[in-house]
Amino acid sequence: MRLLVLTLSIICSILMLSPSCSTLHTQPTAPPPEQPQTPGTESTSPSTSEPQPSPGPSTPVDETLQPSEPSGTLYVHFIDVGQGDSILIDLNDLEIIIDGGDRSPGVVSYLTNYVDGCLEAVVATHPHADHIGGLISVLDSFEVEEIWHNGDSSTSQTYSEFMEAVQSETDDVHIGKRGDVINVGGLQFSILNPNTCDGTTNNNSLVLSLSYGSIDFLFTGDAEKEAEASMLISSVVPVPDVEILKAGHHGSDTACSSAFLAITRPETAIYMAGEGNSYGHPHEETIVNLCNIGAEIYGTDVHGTVVISTDGVTYDLVPEKSAPPISCETFTEIPEESKEEDGHQEDSAEEGSEDENHQDSSESQSDVRITKIFYDGQVYRVESDEYVEITNKGTESQDLAGWVLKDISEGYPSFTFPHYILEPGESIRVCTNEIHPEYGGFSFGYGKAIWNNSDPDTAALYDNEGREVSRKSY
Image 1: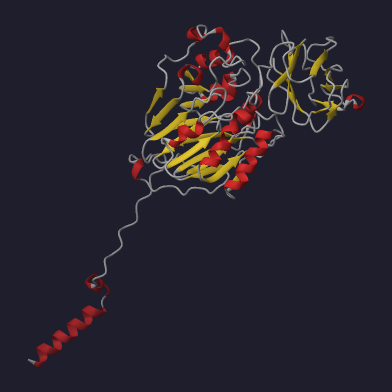
Image 2 (image 1 turned 120 degrees about the vertical axis):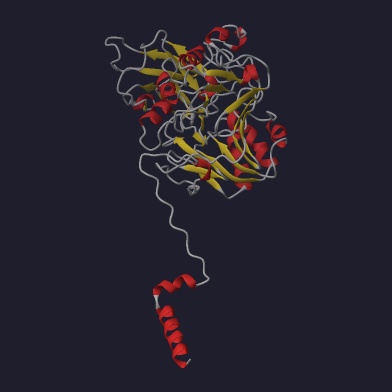
């Protein structure tokens, strides 16, 4: 008996010292690590994959930026605010607004039906009145968590009031540049433009892309062909192939170049313009370019507010007004007052002003005029002492700070004036590629001819509110 007890004691001691006894512990064992996916293959269940970390504000875009993971139905409202832009992005209890139209466009009353609590973000693409005017009342009416703008400025009263509202609303204010990412909740917006604010006010517009699952949006503000070209050659953020494009500059022919559309290739394009607007928006060239790439075209002047809903896989479009998409054929049926040929004005004027873009500018409230375009015409497209002469024909001085002179026949180049007081009766010249101090010392700095390259070739002058005050053709 003693021998048996001794033997059992020895056996138990051996078992407890053996590594194989670890299986007797009551702690659960860790599961085997997940096998890495074989290179070159794709996951068959992306909805269960681990979410990617979101970069913070002003994080540079890189190849790891992922589309926003769908978490419900995303609604994008292209709000009919007349001649202006305002876009509401609504996901569950998350709301973001891009631009607010001009003053008193009804944006606040529209948002009241959709905003749950506060607005998570407000984005002002650029400081023209028909984009930021309505945001003043939005900032007064809603609590806003963060605000983004492009850092461009203006001398207008609207801009001053907007910035006062921004500063009193929140300290969480960001200036967006190309390569930055706006993170709001589960949504990520890549900023494609501007790189720097050294172009015209329109070309300095914030341009945002949003991917929700496999559905891609591009919001372009008033970016024109120069900004489009800059985005196309940039290596910082690639221009995406998208399903939905907000057409730049209200459907003007200064935007939506064939080269830009060849890359973005939208299935659906939406321009935002006022019914019967005096600027001729949308322009026929833009409609033709969009038709050529097979896009379905909707406009707030024809369809009212347009709402797109998507689950990240497919999307639906519901217009406020029942009308077929615009085509090159149906565009010719739009009333003529909506398509006046003189429509190259940068933006809507502030309250109380009339149409100011007639050929002779006889109804303009400004007495500053383009009085001469000089081109000697000896060598085609070679600059030879070219200039545009501008004269103050009024009795009061005019500060030209923020005014823009532009070749509207080709859409570029443009020249933005610094602070300069143009006295009554004084004439200045903006040369193509030379400096003449005796005429103000202004130059496009453009290395080849600008004028007499189109038929007709037309220069237009805009004030610091984006209102066209004069134009002249060569």
